Length: 572
Image 1 (cartoon, rainbow, N blue to C red):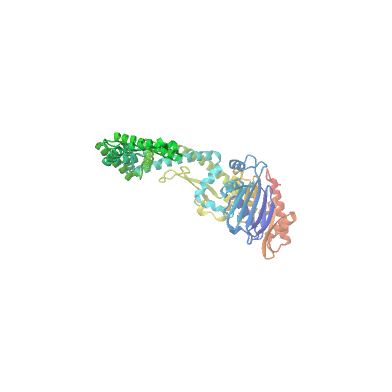
Image 2: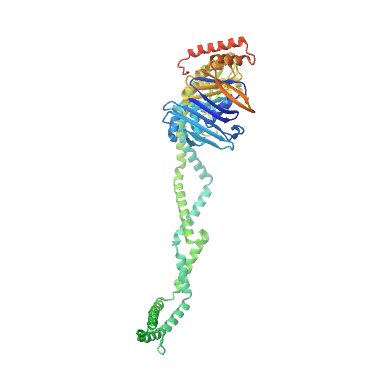
């Protein structure tokens, strides 16, 4: 239940703090005083859509805080546990700030959350039913959800099971349809991938291979030039029979300098330099000789290299600018080909899988349909009992099912479902959404709320002028219904009807006044004598007569009698 509500800089509310209790609380006051603004604030705590328009003119942000307590083991605490939000002290504080620039800040027990998380928590805590909320009944596609909510855990489990099978069925069906539609393209793509993979595999491409081949080709292409250079170098270094080579001449110079190296350090340095040069030159002679031994001309090898380089270049033109890119492309298409081949192998039994899922879907769908039909009979009986209390005893409410013929399987089950209504004897049953009036819709929705209040587990229900357009005994019946709901859940109710206000356990009066040049909303709790005055005002208007006061007193007396006759009252 909502224990405390704090509102600051919200619309025409400067600052407002109010404590709520169990049972039925009504908010009354003149039109435009700010009653619905308070409900809007609670709606924002429950995750409703925020807007910078809510921020009081001249302020930076609106701040709304609500303190709630919930039954141990209830839905709200389970959600908080899933989200990892602490609630050890048994209370939950929801806070929302709406900034003038439109930014929203939401907190749950001090922990920052997004609006989706706040809404997930808020939906388990507060149910707001406004004067336009009955429009839900005008949307036939929402009727099935209402029936399932009434039916409870058995239908919920069957619907979840059906949904899982349906999702698997649609996945398989989609795959099968794609295969049928794109069978030619599939086969062409499979052939192309097979060819490309085989082409690259057969080439046995190696990283760095091209650079090595190019170097070898350049040696073979320049064989004569290389041979001539090596021969000339060898001859110059080693000499001929008639003339000594550079090596021999350097050896003679080294011997000469070694003979005088001990006479002067400069001579010694020259001798060392000549010795170093001699040994380096000797190594060069050996290297040139080795290269001449290795050098050979192989015209067949040159042709092989040219052919191999041509293969590599063809692969690069098709699949990448380098060997590494070609190999990377190969890894990609090889994986795709493997997946397509695996899918191809499974294609033969894909139709069998679809058929099996469809059979299973029909089986669970029939169980779900049977459970819904059974629940619909109970709902019709419960609605009729509630409508009789609301002076609609001759109204016939029915749940109608229809099985689609050409639509295929539905995501929600095998049947369409819609509420039907007959408001007067002798008339035909017609879709509720097409014939019900505003007053009838309000009473039907109130009947549903009465039926659902025990099973929903929501601890705070808010009625925002749901009694608009009714009066007399109907108004009294609505008042008693709302009071009955308050036995199971905390109820906050905005009303203009004295019959409804008289049934309240707690009564707050909302007024607005001009302070300086600004409009402000104030709220005060009414004691017994103030309640008589307010009920008289609600009945008589601006001029409160003695008769109106007597009537107000009588309303309170009758309300006490009705409440005392209600079992298991939670009011304080």
